Image (cartoon, rainbow, N blue to C red):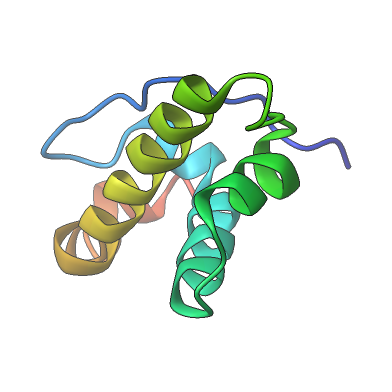
Length: 91
């Protein structure tokens, strides 16, 4: 199965978006790597294929945008996963 493509800037909303549904695994991987103390440069390379030496600004922007959304999912978004109208997307 191919990895989903990603946007440099994550769509932010107070609801779970299609982008979120497509990137749940990515969010979990980001949170794990962040918890392990992995550097932004390493996360950018490993998860997004971005060379942080060549493009450090983009690496930071992409990683931080996705990490911000991943954290939102752990604090707020997960509650929405329990709602019936959202569950139908996962069945």
